[in-house]
Image (cartoon, rainbow, N blue to C red; front, side, top):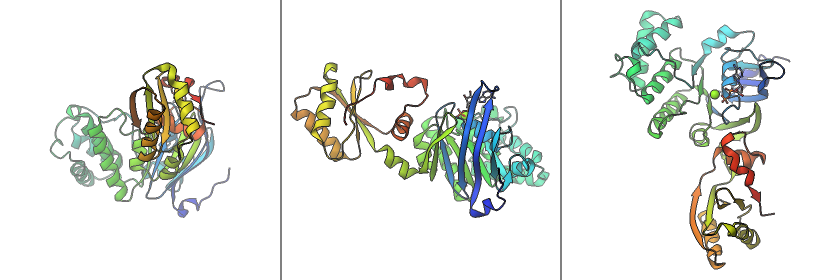
Length: 342
Ligand SMILES: Nc1ncnc2c1ncn2[C@@H]1O[C@H](COP(=O)(O)OP(=O)(O)O)[C@@H](O)[C@H]1O
Ligand SMILES: [Mg+2]
């Protein structure tokens, strides 16, 4: 594979081409199966994918912790295979599982990392104090980090990844398992970092998180890129909300979906029956469509037991983008989706 030494001058902080990683020999798991992606300098790329998609494997390769079987990757102009030492100095890594030393205080954790990165004692001290301040941890600085709340731990982990002023930050599922309030705190910190000029590669399982933080998205599943582009473009593909209508009598499901298909409502297409849930799903993009659907069903005399709307889930994003359901085991009910509209 050819190496393009001028590539990063074009404005890409990360360039990945044809990345392959196989675990456990020829019959094992192909965690990455030819991944291409770019992260433009000063932006956030969201890498969206379900559990097992290959996100952490990608981050580990880009951190030089494991070697790819094929393909190339450059970060901040450095090649993962031939310039690992320089590359490591250019990156910050926040793991999915916060890895601070619980016995050490917040300050000691950050100071120690500074020393490990070859900063002087003085610089390690001032950098630790500065980041503790920035992440609202100054008051807790002297307490053992084992006593911190989940949100404080995550913020300490973020601070730790920034000690060496990395040009490129990897955030691997930074908010998985956090409550909504703490998740918002982390999002604010990430936005601040990007505002200060960092380039971020963010992996996530949440569409909402990608929407909040990323300008561009790469969707991966089973080690392959299945979609990519600007967040707004992907959302437009996925459509807006889904309206779920629950008939009082389950036996009415097909007739209800059929009525919607025949009515040819403006912009409403592709009503599907979810027999397991006992609902008809109708993709809608406006309140006017919602009203039109409900009115039509009323006029046709359907007895409705419930109506709800919801934003697309990750599963629905996959469904919309690929026409296939994701590999998530919790997704069994999609087997029963039936296309009703033409
Ligand atoms: N060290 C490893 N040995 C064997 N299989 C692995 C290893 N690391 C990851 N895998 C497998 O590779 C696939 C991708 O894993 P991972 O990159 O952790 O996905 P994600 O972070 O998107 O959840 C999964 O099927 C996982 O079980
Ligand atoms: Mg992972």
